[in-house]
Amino acid sequence: MSTPSPDTPDTPDTPDTDERREPPLNGSEAETLVGFLEYQRATLERKCRGLSDEQLRVTLPPSTMTLAGLLKHLAYVEDGWCAEVLGGQPMSEPWASVDWEADRDWEWHSAKDDDGASLRALWTERVARSREIVGGILARGEGALGDVFDDDGRRLVSLRWVLTHLIEEYARHNGHADLIRESIDGATGE
Image 1 (cartoon, helix red, strand yellow):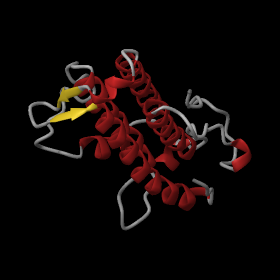
Image 2 (image 1 turned 120 degrees about the horizontal axis):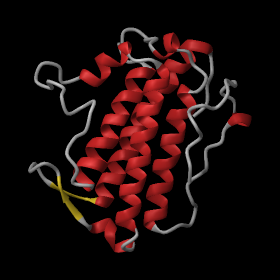
Image 3 (image 1 turned 30 degrees about the vertical axis):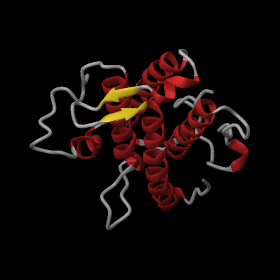
Protein backbone atom coordinates (compact mmCIF):
# COMPACT_ATOMS: atom_id res chain seq x y z
CA MET A 1 0.00 0.00 0.00
CA SER A 2 1.23 3.48 -0.68
CA THR A 3 0.46 6.80 0.86
CA PRO A 4 -0.39 9.58 -1.59
CA SER A 5 2.52 11.86 -2.39
CA PRO A 6 2.87 15.02 -0.32
CA ASP A 7 3.21 16.83 -3.65
CA THR A 8 -0.39 16.11 -4.60
CA PRO A 9 -1.86 19.20 -6.28
CA ASP A 10 -3.98 21.47 -4.12
CA THR A 11 -7.46 20.02 -4.17
CA PRO A 12 -10.37 20.32 -1.79
CA ASP A 13 -10.30 17.63 0.88
CA THR A 14 -13.44 15.86 -0.26
CA PRO A 15 -14.43 12.19 -0.45
CA ASP A 16 -13.97 12.19 -4.23
CA THR A 17 -10.27 13.11 -3.81
CA ASP A 18 -9.67 10.44 -1.18
CA GLU A 19 -6.90 8.09 -2.35
CA ARG A 20 -6.73 6.18 0.94
CA ARG A 21 -7.06 2.42 0.76
CA GLU A 22 -9.34 0.72 3.24
CA PRO A 23 -7.62 -1.92 5.40
CA PRO A 24 -8.33 -5.49 4.27
CA LEU A 25 -11.60 -6.90 5.55
CA ASN A 26 -10.32 -10.45 5.63
CA GLY A 27 -6.52 -10.25 5.70
CA SER A 28 -3.98 -11.90 7.92
CA GLU A 29 -3.18 -10.27 11.24
CA ALA A 30 -0.08 -8.61 9.77
CA GLU A 31 -1.95 -7.39 6.68
CA THR A 32 -4.72 -5.99 8.87
CA LEU A 33 -2.36 -4.17 11.24
CA VAL A 34 -0.27 -2.73 8.41
CA GLY A 35 -3.45 -1.87 6.48
CA PHE A 36 -4.86 0.13 9.40
CA LEU A 37 -1.52 1.88 9.95
CA GLU A 38 -1.29 2.82 6.27
CA TYR A 39 -4.86 4.13 6.37
CA GLN A 40 -4.01 6.34 9.35
CA ARG A 41 -0.82 7.59 7.69
CA ALA A 42 -2.79 8.44 4.54
CA THR A 43 -5.35 10.26 6.68
CA LEU A 44 -2.65 12.53 8.13
CA GLU A 45 -1.32 13.23 4.63
CA ARG A 46 -4.84 14.07 3.49
CA LYS A 47 -5.39 16.47 6.40
CA CYS A 48 -2.16 18.34 5.58
CA ARG A 49 -2.57 18.29 1.79
CA GLY A 50 -2.82 21.58 -0.11
CA LEU A 51 -2.08 23.84 2.85
CA SER A 52 0.39 26.70 2.87
CA ASP A 53 3.17 27.04 5.44
CA GLU A 54 1.06 29.58 7.31
CA GLN A 55 -1.97 27.28 7.35
CA LEU A 56 0.15 24.42 8.70
CA ARG A 57 1.03 26.71 11.65
CA VAL A 58 -2.59 27.57 12.54
CA THR A 59 -3.69 26.66 16.05
CA LEU A 60 -7.17 25.99 17.33
CA PRO A 61 -7.22 27.67 20.77
CA PRO A 62 -6.90 26.89 23.53
CA SER A 63 -4.57 24.21 22.10
CA THR A 64 -1.20 25.22 20.65
CA MET A 65 -1.13 22.12 18.44
CA THR A 66 -0.59 22.67 14.70
CA LEU A 67 -0.60 20.45 11.65
CA ALA A 68 3.08 21.35 11.24
CA GLY A 69 3.71 20.05 14.75
CA LEU A 70 1.74 16.90 14.00
CA LEU A 71 3.86 16.16 10.92
CA LYS A 72 7.09 16.62 12.85
CA HIS A 73 5.87 14.74 15.92
CA LEU A 74 4.71 11.77 13.88
CA ALA A 75 8.02 11.72 11.96
CA TYR A 76 9.69 11.51 15.37
CA VAL A 77 7.31 8.75 16.47
CA GLU A 78 8.08 6.78 13.28
CA ASP A 79 11.82 7.10 13.92
CA GLY A 80 11.56 6.28 17.59
CA TRP A 81 9.52 3.13 17.23
CA CYS A 82 10.59 1.79 13.86
CA ALA A 83 14.17 2.89 13.26
CA GLU A 84 15.36 2.95 16.86
CA VAL A 85 13.36 0.20 18.60
CA LEU A 86 12.57 -2.20 15.75
CA GLY A 87 15.60 -1.45 13.59
CA GLY A 88 18.13 -1.04 16.38
CA GLN A 89 19.46 2.12 14.74
CA PRO A 90 20.71 5.13 16.72
CA MET A 91 18.40 8.13 16.70
CA SER A 92 19.15 10.25 13.65
CA GLU A 93 18.92 13.96 13.00
CA PRO A 94 17.10 16.17 13.55
CA TRP A 95 16.39 14.34 16.84
CA ALA A 96 19.87 13.18 17.86
CA SER A 97 21.26 16.60 18.78
CA VAL A 98 18.15 17.90 20.56
CA ASP A 99 18.42 18.74 24.26
CA TRP A 100 15.26 16.86 25.23
CA GLU A 101 15.72 17.78 28.90
CA ALA A 102 15.51 21.47 27.99
CA ASP A 103 12.40 20.98 25.82
CA ARG A 104 10.72 17.58 25.95
CA ASP A 105 8.25 18.77 23.26
CA TRP A 106 10.92 20.15 20.94
CA GLU A 107 9.42 18.61 17.79
CA TRP A 108 6.10 20.34 18.45
CA HIS A 109 7.66 23.72 19.30
CA SER A 110 10.30 23.79 16.56
CA ALA A 111 7.87 22.93 13.76
CA LYS A 112 6.78 26.57 13.57
CA ASP A 113 10.24 27.38 12.19
CA ASP A 114 10.08 24.74 9.44
CA ASP A 115 8.52 25.17 6.02
CA GLY A 116 5.76 22.82 4.92
CA ALA A 117 7.80 21.18 2.17
CA SER A 118 10.56 20.27 4.65
CA LEU A 119 8.07 18.91 7.18
CA ARG A 120 6.27 16.84 4.55
CA ALA A 121 9.59 15.53 3.23
CA LEU A 122 10.80 14.63 6.74
CA TRP A 123 7.58 12.78 7.54
CA THR A 124 7.48 11.02 4.14
CA GLU A 125 11.12 9.93 4.47
CA ARG A 126 10.61 8.57 7.98
CA VAL A 127 7.45 6.71 6.97
CA ALA A 128 9.33 5.14 4.04
CA ARG A 129 12.11 4.00 6.38
CA SER A 130 9.55 2.59 8.80
CA ARG A 131 7.85 0.65 6.00
CA GLU A 132 11.19 -0.82 4.98
CA ILE A 133 12.06 -1.89 8.54
CA VAL A 134 8.64 -3.37 9.30
CA GLY A 135 8.51 -5.05 5.90
CA GLY A 136 11.90 -6.64 6.53
CA ILE A 137 10.76 -8.04 9.85
CA LEU A 138 7.46 -9.30 8.45
CA ALA A 139 9.29 -10.96 5.56
CA ARG A 140 10.27 -13.62 8.12
CA GLY A 141 6.61 -14.62 8.33
CA GLU A 142 3.46 -13.93 10.32
CA GLY A 143 5.14 -15.22 13.48
CA ALA A 144 7.40 -12.16 13.42
CA LEU A 145 4.53 -10.17 14.94
CA GLY A 146 5.50 -11.82 18.22
CA ASP A 147 9.18 -10.90 17.91
CA VAL A 148 10.26 -8.88 20.93
CA PHE A 149 12.36 -5.71 20.83
CA ASP A 150 14.08 -3.71 23.56
CA ASP A 151 12.58 -0.25 24.07
CA ASP A 152 15.85 1.38 25.19
CA GLY A 153 16.04 -0.76 28.31
CA ARG A 154 12.64 0.39 29.57
CA ARG A 155 10.62 -2.64 28.50
CA LEU A 156 10.31 -5.36 25.90
CA VAL A 157 7.67 -4.84 23.21
CA SER A 158 6.48 -7.05 20.36
CA LEU A 159 6.17 -5.95 16.76
CA ARG A 160 2.41 -6.49 17.19
CA TRP A 161 2.41 -4.03 20.10
CA VAL A 162 4.45 -1.43 18.17
CA LEU A 163 2.13 -1.58 15.15
CA THR A 164 -0.93 -1.31 17.39
CA HIS A 165 0.63 1.61 19.24
CA LEU A 166 1.42 3.41 15.97
CA ILE A 167 -2.19 2.96 14.83
CA GLU A 168 -3.38 4.41 18.15
CA GLU A 169 -0.93 7.32 17.96
CA TYR A 170 -1.98 8.25 14.43
CA ALA A 171 -5.71 7.79 15.10
CA ARG A 172 -5.60 10.03 18.18
CA HIS A 173 -3.66 12.74 16.39
CA ASN A 174 -5.80 12.46 13.26
CA GLY A 175 -8.73 13.46 15.46
CA HIS A 176 -6.78 16.60 16.34
CA ALA A 177 -5.94 17.11 12.66
CA ASP A 178 -9.65 16.89 11.76
CA LEU A 179 -10.49 19.79 14.04
CA ILE A 180 -7.52 21.92 13.05
CA ARG A 181 -8.11 21.40 9.32
CA GLU A 182 -11.81 22.23 9.63
CA SER A 183 -10.91 25.46 11.45
CA ILE A 184 -8.56 26.43 8.58
CA ASP A 185 -10.75 25.94 5.52
CA GLY A 186 -13.88 24.06 6.54
CA ALA A 187 -12.66 20.74 5.07
CA THR A 188 -14.16 17.81 6.92
CA GLY A 189 -14.11 14.04 6.67
CA GLU A 190 -12.25 11.29 8.40
